[in-house]
Length: 169
Image (cartoon, rainbow, N blue to C red; front, top):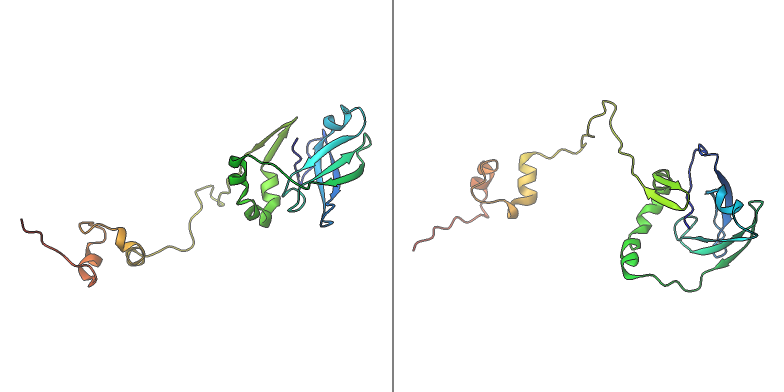
């Protein structure tokens, strides 16, 4: 089961619950679907994935009144290799996890990531601030540029490190 966070409580079918990591005591409120709790008979065990509250994975026990009744830390986690490879760069998301969670769509027990494309004021493709000159591009990538490239011809001719060889057969 996945638990996501959302800034705007647009969906009235969710409820915010504050979780506290049992390892590092980091606190974070996450929105979860009310249906998950309402359909449970008593306590529901929620697995809080690494990165949702902090860098630890743990379990939370939530009652029918949306109150956390306890936590259990996970001592050992078994993951398949493909998940480990995907999660290896997860620490990069921690810098801006609000943006990450704003792009998650939660429908029942289904979670989908749909990134919102940021556009400039004119709704065009964002322009890059650091434009490189043709000479800078040549100097950066000259080992990958062919000798007969017309765009970089004037730089190729002036480059003393390029040795023009004539092949004689």
